[in-house]
Image (cartoon, rainbow, N blue to C red):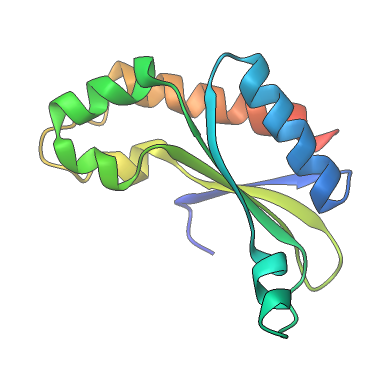
Length: 132
């Protein structure tokens, strides 16, 4: 696994973890843009997939400065957190590390304040949703 992906163990099933994450995100004042049920999509075409859901969310106060520095940040924003159950039955929250994700773009410096804020917010939100 790449060090660019942060994984947080959850004490709950996928749906309960995602519900908790969505509540934490909205409670923090961010906007939820979409909740994607990957397993539901697989089932709709008669294919099996362990439970997996993706939450797409953001806060313009954090994302806009990144896109002002480099419009290509829009490829990575809004933020995304995947909640999934692995083959051993463990549920995880996973997300791309904001510094790794954004610092490769030309106009964004690795020490940009919004990167630290995104990293902190993702850590707090996933920690809260994990139930650990």
